[in-house]
Image (cartoon, rainbow, N blue to C red; front, side, top):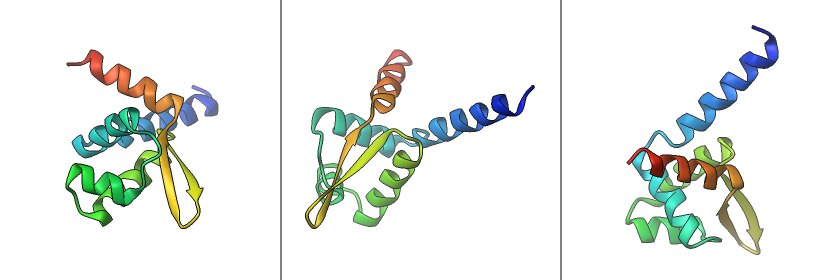
Length: 94
């Protein structure tokens, strides 16, 4: 196997780990329905701790599933095309 193959395996691992939590799956589903939410709005809608929501979003962003956009004092979040693809894939597993 070449080095490029190992890198893509690591990238796939990062993506899979990004959604390997029921809260993160809830967050990507929420962002599909309501793009441009802040961490405060996400934590309120899911009734979870703000710090917990922030950590989940950080992991989703590292996996390339969520992107962040500054909006004045707040940061808005939306699904990337990869995030949408992953959500569709997860629905096939139900």
